[in-house]
Image (tube, rainbow, N blue to C red; front, side):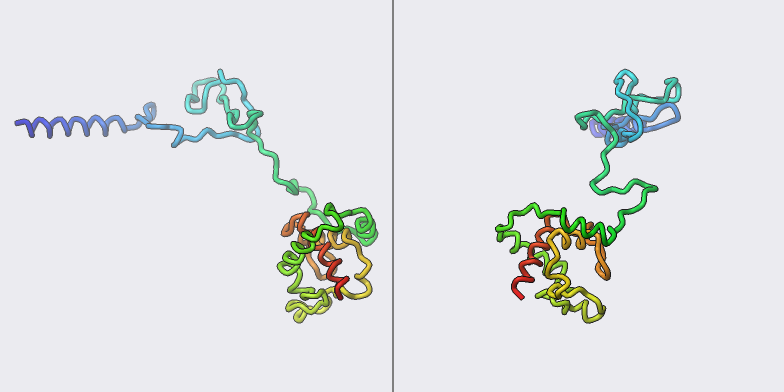
Amino acid sequence: MKLTKLKYLGIVTAGALLASCAAGVDDTGLEYAPQMYHSTPYEPLTQIVDEDRGSWLDSNDEDGHGEFYNSNPYNQFKMNMREPVANTVRRGQPLPVRLTKDELEVAATTLVSPFPADDQSVVKDGKVLYDSYCKHCHGAKGNADGLVADKYAGVANLNGAAYLEITEGHIFHVITFGKGLMGAHGSQVSPEDRWRIARYVKELQKSN
């Protein structure tokens, strides 16, 4: 008898649980932790800061406005819009282009390395970066004898007479925007690392 009562109680309990999960047009059923199922949509182009407008979960077709409080509580300014990442190009705008020869000459004289001239750690780090990004074309000593240079003629010999007088600013610019056969590496190498490579190239030229 006791077992029968337990079975009966179990059936009733299971039925109640199943009924509580039923859903309809006007009854969505019972939800536990609804925020896990319905994340608050932070629309980037709207900014409703009035909390009296209600939440998205309380919104319905009969509220008369369809707009609700949607400011982001995790942002100190309650903003939904995020600033684009650095160097983002706005849609419809032209991509950055390489400077002309005259502009390169200006950059070569105006761009100055942020690192002290006697900082040997810059040269050491520059060598590591050079070996990673430049050696395969320009060669270990800068003599344009890297593995890529064997396949493509015209790789710059960094120890040639035309390159011995170029400045670190010139090298920085060429790494950033490219020149001749060399493509732009601005998106691959950070500005600080470009300056390190430029410093190492100048030291490399002195050793040859």
